[in-house]
Amino acid sequence: MRWFWLDRFTEFTSGTRATAVKCVALSEEHLHDHWPFYPVMPNTLIAEGMAQAGGLLVSEFYRFSELVVLAKFSKCTFSGLARPGDVLTYRAVVDQAKDAGASVMVTAHVGERRQAEAEIFFARLDADSQDLPKGTRLFDPNHLYHWLKLVGVFDVGTRPDGTRLRPEDYGFPSLTFDL
Amino acid sequence: MATATKEEIFSKVQEALVDALGVEDEEVTPEATLQGDLDAESIDFLDIVFRLEKAFDIKIERGELFPEDILTSTDYVEEGRVNSAGIAKLRERMPFADLSKFERDPVVQKLGQQLTVRDMCNFVEHKLSAAA
Image 1 (cartoon, rainbow over the protein chains, first blue to last red):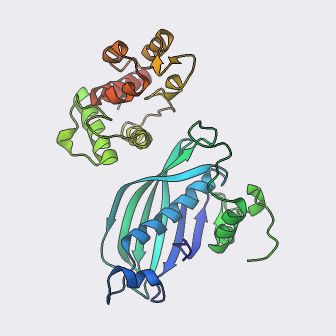
Image 2: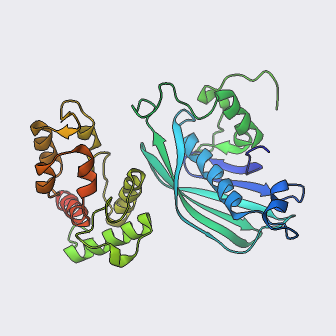
Image 3: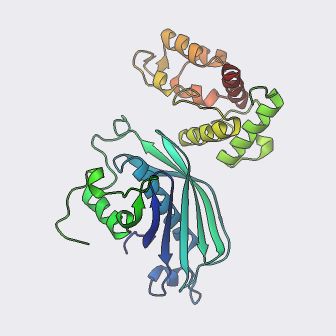
């Protein structure tokens, strides 16, 4: 299993908002492991998808160069179930951001129905902190770039003025293959 | 908001703490300590700061509410205890807090444990009066 809990971004506005989709498929093993004979997408994994949508938005705010970690869900509520064939749409909006961290409001919808909403708090860790081993990083830059490419951040990503986000602006290493 | 009464300040601080810490209204009394009674963890302080900024339309700089830079400085901390220069610095930076108890046993970790809801209300009042 790969820890990708959103399939693709359809909107990504730097420091502001992002929309991503996750297609729920019967072929996903976790649906069968949750409730036997009644496959649903576990709410915990919907929460993970919401955190990934918000987390990448916040990480971009810090230029993908800082240690950004999920600190807490200040609030999280669910209603209804997400079932095979459903498309979850995650909408993340940055509520507040400063050098130490950011709070993001994220909703998940199935069609018009609100499936979940959360207030998620991300902390930016100081890489020079005495509490962290020197050189600590969360992602290998190649892997991070791979992930961003897979979920289309640079296909739809823009700055608030409408100009496109480009991988080279973040110093990502060149990939030797096209994804 | 600069003319807020103490009751209005307490009410908004209480709301911020209830939302940030998932505690009940009645648990947030003026005497309650943030870390001891309300189980606030270090990561909660930034969440609380965000909520106070929004509720009172103020800006709170890093370290303003809780001066972690002093508590991690070798100039002010010796063998886990804040020295006299550090105490003086804390008094200067935290005029809103009652530090008398901390001063009797200035173990670094105890400062956060002794910070109360009343101290937080005083901090907001201090910020609002400075902005007025």
